[in-house]
Length: 88
Image (cartoon, rainbow, N blue to C red; front, side, top):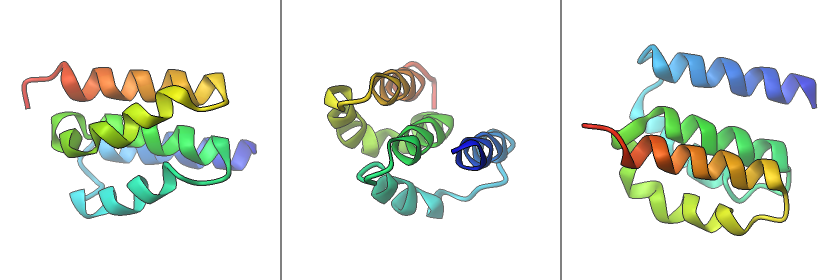
């Protein structure tokens, strides 16, 4: 689990630096439906790092607001906030 969390943190940092292309969005979108809650959390946070560039994914993130894991719900809410509260 730690390795998954660490890779998610690195991915988010890469996105913030612009080192991850928008082409990653479909893969991250698919990860939102993973059986692994940590993968769902990391995908949500990563998508939030794209800010307004990931606006089309907002409905998928909104579905995670009903996830069975609280940390996934919180990550989805944070991601939605980052996507919706930006000037992009």
